[in-house]
Length: 178
Image (cartoon, one colour):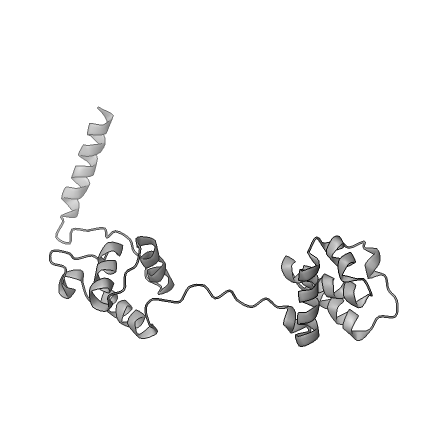
């Protein structure tokens, strides 16, 4: 953000220009700064062609920013969120998925001899239950968005004898040195 710009010289400035300058100083978003700067230059009397050359935009983009500013003021310059693809599962289905994964094991819902949830098992369960097909990566994204993490379980022996374990560690260290 240029600080020693001749454009920012102090002269009789309208409240609109002062508001734009304040917004330019306050923002940390480069895209918003550029949009504010386009409006600032327009309010200073520069043509769309001159602004486009100075800022590296096409004239159509400059005109779009000015039009958005004229319709909605500074708030009109804020970019709208990019929507993305629609979700394949409804919010109710997502809640049920979380409930099933957190309260049941795969063998309880039709996957014999399986005790741990893996992405491919979740994919298959969703396909069987709602006839919705996900890719491996897509299902991983769904689980991440729902706040579920997937890691391999680690096992601890509840009935293990701590003395025998310590003796084994010592014996193993001796074997490693040989």
